[in-house]
Image (cartoon, rainbow, N blue to C red; front, side, top):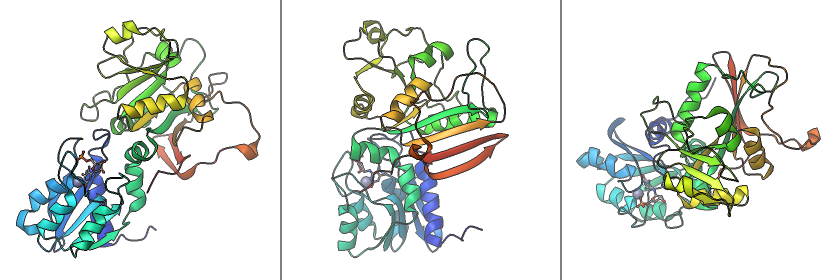
Length: 357
Ligand code: AOF
Ligand code: ZN
């Protein structure tokens, strides 16, 4: 049985749940949640809804008003100490009279990086850092990757049959996984900034790359990798905000005329750096095998999420086209989770460490 949560962990869980409401909406800023607690009762709460709007602490302090005095504030990220688009949250917390601040993870933004915690301590506030830190790092992977590496956090996703095939060859293709699995992957499209496919998948599936309206109507930015820029400009993935990643010398005027943003890159790393410059902090790579393998082989996949469906297909398309290697060179995932969704199995794990201070 899992160990019971401490009171601090329970309140931080609530703050993390609030922060999650901003996932996919705050880039280049982090998703952040804040809860203010007085005598075991929530007196204020908030989350950062999007870049340019108020920080989580501001909403929570507004709600708490005078009841913040002597209270404890739980924040999923170190309160900021800089004058950015908004004034410093550390100052607002100090002015409110909170007695204690519990922080999950330090802010890697070089303008903050420990100074927020220092300012609170200098004002005599009791500060505790690191409560449920692993959960916060996970939630802030995109922000951390963009801030510390200048490129988005990359999640590779596919669904395969029990005999390791992601699609039938030729005609007669349909969904591999069941409804529960597909509903879960819609929540990922909702929580990540962008969703990417290669030109082969665009051609064979013509995916809409939306959340199908199931997650509050916000869709990720579609990214199509097409070196030659020969995809149909009529594909469903093209909409305002879509991106085309193509070779430096590709002819793209038809796409530009349709309002598609062009990213020119000769390598997967250049492509990610280009997306980072456009404030994309996380990307869901949805295939196909050529795209996934190009990123995996370049060491640029940070996280893997795979559905396995209990069906056998026989001859078909494998998820990856990477070159063969001996078993002792296989890449083990870390922080592995296994879950069943209907009769499908979801396996997730990390290939990279989440960037941190
Ligand atoms: C917090 N609480 O809710 C958020 C923080 O441009 P600005 O003014 O919004 O500042 C963005 C930076 O502020 C961002 O890089 C990160 O360091 C911090 N985000 N900090 O105390 C929040 N969203
Ligand atoms: Zn702030």
